[in-house]
Length: 487
Ligand SMILES: *Cc1c(COP(=O)(O)O)cnc(C)c1O
Picture 1 (cartoon, protein in one colour):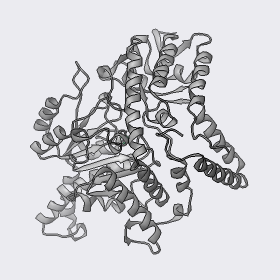
Picture 2: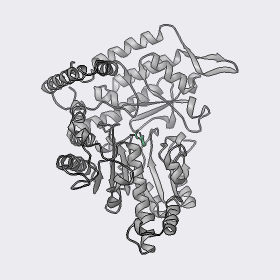
Picture 3: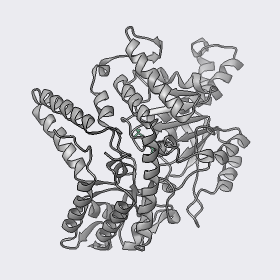
Picture 4: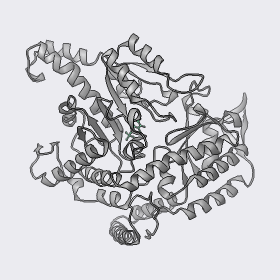
């Protein structure tokens, strides 16, 4: 295995994992063979495609195996040592380990490992902010200790106040996330939202414009973080802006937590020392199980700790156990090498596009993702995404700033380096990936629609998909997924 492989272990590890999976599949097969079959096929499919989805990765066998245990069945509402159910001593152990590894890895005073996903982590954070900054002072003003002590009338007033707060977050078309106050998500129904964008000339965040928007709007919450912004963020500046207007700074590092964990983002680019609350997923660049995590300062910790029952039901104890394993992996030196390779590879991919005349949002990248504007190929994001998929390249279409094709068809394709870097791809391989992508897009034409070119239909020149698939297979074979794992 390469130094960036998830396990950091050798052949023994792969052989043992193979035995475990063979046995598990036999057990599953005895009950529902079609599930066993789909599970086998999923591994084969993952092994056989060039996965460039920026939000995906491949967790280690140790992380995956940890999820398939008897911790799944436990109810463990409450917190470590304070459960509403008996017999949670072993859940206490794994949750405490996950939190400890998270605190140590990120240098955070407090970590909460219960959120089931990134969206849940954000909800926990929002309600922790509202509880700390609106509910607690509201109760104090009324001389009450607990919400249950309030009269109907006072409770209604407090509820109205909780539902009438302001949030400033990054716009969707410049890379923000739906959970940052957008109407289709509950965050947009909870908060009055205003958004900041990027400088139209450069595509970079314009901190003066963020500060001006904050001064005018006076948000309770300033959200930084993104899903599709190919650059680093200066969180020290974001904190200055938050402090100036009395906002709580929440950073959603769902996408780039691996680069923080691996110390690629340090100083002003490390959100944890600057934010009041930092949220993340654990399954993207962090390469853990599907789940969420909240890091907080002492000030917000007591409210975050009440995520269950505020927002969450019983925690997924088997996933918390897997988070502990993944975070232990992320504390190893190999993970730093992995994170640096993720950033270097994204750079190689961006350079590969630039030298082949590709047009990139912001002109490049300095994180793990690249946003290619495909209008220069005469295509929409939707057409490009489909033509790439036909050729064995898995990506997703994504809006570009002020996208003329809207959020459905889009004008961009988002590429990420975390998954293929886990397979061991290096800079030369990513340059070859750029070459293959350009080959597909150069050989794709929009089909004619009733009123000009179609935004969805396309034709791919004969032989292109086959040629690119064969070239991709060479790269994939040279960098096997889960090397040594045989079913
Ligand atoms: C992926 C993502 C989320 C949501 O994570 P889920 O686990 O899918 O709920 C939240 N915020 C950002 C910035 C993300 O990129």
